[in-house]
Length: 469
Image (cartoon, rainbow, N blue to C red):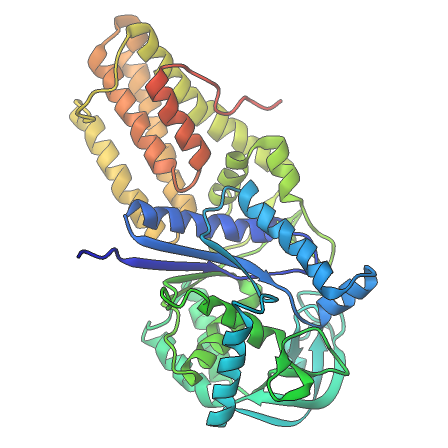
């Protein structure tokens, strides 16, 4: 029996200290493109996302809200699940770290295994702790004495914790990254983590005293400690064990070190396979400042989709923002992209061709082949460049080549003037072209792709993107 090739992709799991903002929406959309692309390749795709629901920050936020932590995170987790539906994300599952049936047993099993091996041990520790990052920081990590991401002075914490022998496994992680057994995208992040490891790695604390934090998975056989949120959370990716290791894990650059160093080290210690590729995206800035729930710099993705449509939002973040770099959001930029690329570009082309087919009674040919050789080569080249760009994680470039085809079609129409001569071959070629465009757009703009294919069947033109004033 022929078996499909497996493809397992994850986002990071979103931290439930506040409702979702555009930063996580970007990550969901990027991962969704890859999941849909690999389904297009007829692979057996499993796409996992979810929420990270433990830790000191959440405990404090729940207290501020006058709620029990579980009620607090459940309400927020539901918002993240709603976001996957609003953005038309095709995830197969949604994991929560408060899930005692699916997540906790894995955490407890691996914890006990590493204790038996001597890779987890207990000692007294004093360090600088950023509650926003849920991480201990070094003096060298601070900027003007503050966390560079949360712009707050870290707290001094001294307590007896359990530690993981990260120093033992860091050289092995480094070798795997150097040999591309763990591929890091983009290269600048690969170089960053290799340089970081080269500077020397110490063992890390992986538990918290209940005097400091009570909201977490209890340490097996030690009721006075809870497992550190990052040790707990990373293990959620193992949930669909049939698909592990992940082919791609999509993460933001602010949590890159956890995923590119600590996570592979834990897997090495547990004798489990490491992820094949770690894909790191940049930040969305607003007016030049990083999106941050902690700092209150957020744009509500639900409002954006409600006002302008899901595919308009998906298009902006996939086209405007270089996939592995930072990108800036303003409403002015959004509307410019919407009107220029979607309303005047794609929408206008589809409307023109459907109208031409209607008035000339031209049908989409059964052969689905372009008669004009130059036109045919243009479409073939578009498919080749589209595949290459997606497989290199360059989603903005993949959309760019689709829009080059849209421009080619516009020029072809102006040259051939089929509205005058009713040339059936020209109109037929244009119908095949927009069918190809619809298929090329499916991983990126699934709703729009379906609408175009439906208009090809009915020969009834409906505006895809009404122009914004």
